[in-house]
Length: 354
Image 1 (tube, rainbow, N blue to C red):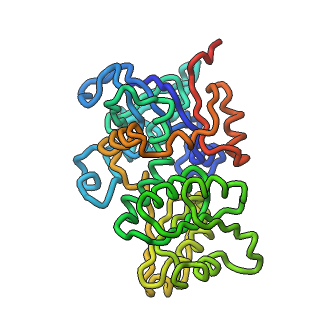
Image 2 (cartoon, one colour; image 1 turned 180 degrees about the horizontal axis):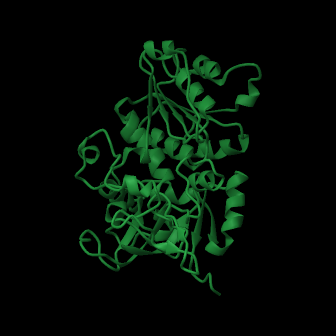
Image 3 (cartoon, rainbow, N blue to C red; image 1 turned 90 degrees about the horizontal axis):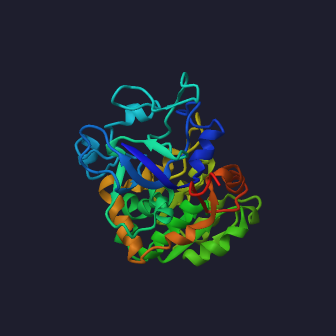
């Protein structure tokens, strides 16, 4: 189907690929994956949406038929994955973007390519927004980062099943704040926010963090040791979340997890070739190391519910948007992202030609 993109946000994954760190990164390509738009036309056999429908592109597809979609513990749909990973469409193995001359292909990115006024997606990669009152320029954030943080808490670790639990969040960007928001909502008792930029602590506390730690303030000590020492019972943190993509931080997050039952969830995507390491004893003594993609949400099935949750006023979604700019200002938006000066910048195509 072809979709007219109304709004698209910048995510660190876009910058990560642009910088050449993505092992699946293909160039030339059109980046962008966190967006919302309107269906312009559909191809033969498409039944779940029609022209005029409001939709959210989903890099994590959902067909509802494969083993991964049917399994309650997974959202890793494989219906189009082999093709989106190669930057092409399933139907013919080709692309829908070309250079102006028309002789060179431009690859798709994550099956979405939302940094474009119009894009083409597989039906499995589009979540329909039933509520036409939902502002596309806000709910576009539900296509990646914020949903991932929420889902890591609710779906992957199920923090809500353990009221009063302690939580540690490493990296206080948009994803980290989403983890904090969900952890507070899930009934966590202590929420530790960990970041080397103390300017982020004000927002962390506003979102629900009870403690803020800067590893630079503990020279000569490992931050995992500090967290264990400061944990409620002195044995570690019940749930820890790594939201950066740094393998050393992933290790720290695991090693401060509670002895006997602590769970550490990897959310951040590390650069190509990076490997994680720890002493096996950390796992033998009961810690669990796990990861999450799109927070475990089954995209087409679950994203409409997140939109309704937002419309009921039950989230802080609007507060993640710190900047709004025209798409023509995308380079300035990337500068804000790299400088840590924004949570999410939403770009719109409206009036870009004026």
